[in-house]
Image 1 (cartoon, rainbow, N blue to C red):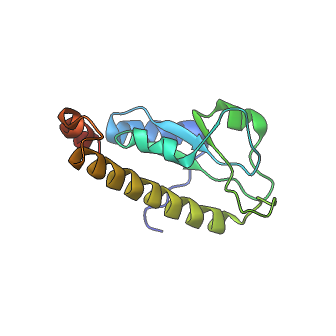
Image 2: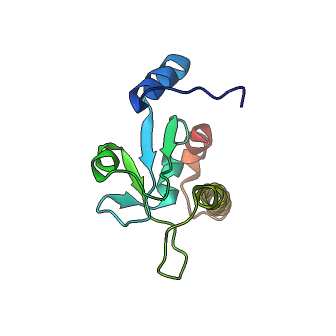
Image 3: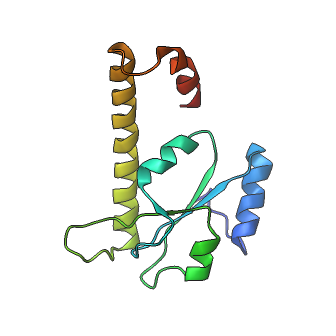
Length: 131
């Protein structure tokens, strides 16, 4: 908890991250409700070099206006039961696991594709630099 810092707003967090990284951040929100601009978790993989501020709501969820102000809204975690409301700690655990696995499978496919001629190997260096 020594790294924990309480701030007044998301804007303060964005400013702090910009000061530390020199990069604009992408704000990402999660919700149990499917939204029009929802994207799959794997869409985050194309932003590997960009700082991401990932926000998880509590039981009441985040305000729709707030969610709409974010750069990316992730698709809900599907449980197969039709009931998508999870505790924050469960949602974060699943999120981290799925993001890690999406990255793992993307890398495995890319390496397979380059080795077997399914990808343009001249782009391999560029892609590797983005990782």
